[in-house]
Image (cartoon, rainbow, N blue to C red; front, side):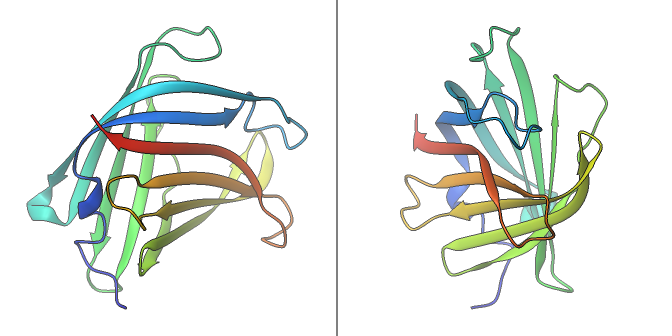
Length: 160
């Protein structure tokens, strides 16, 4: 199946999001998980070749102040790939290195080479849309060139 600008259509709209993440995603030895809720509103941009996802976290699990984040997803029809950027008020003025990839059926895989906490890191986003009304996202890091992956954040979406 080839990727298209409609791959992420399932995520358009308003969502309640249950987050499960490591307390410190930058620490490969961290094994303490926290959970918190967010809301997300996703709208198409640029004639539908992209989406902006605005997330609001009123009560973070780490007792920090509320924060907002955006995700920008853009489809490149010349090579059939998506690029996904993330930014939040927790790191003002920073737009993360984009992950790049595509969907194969209902599973999307997007990766980037980055530096996390001073350490060379492969970053991977997985999107699972087997049930488009209950999609899931997860982030994993690899510190060994992709041989092993450490899951550090999951989001479970439901309409609301």
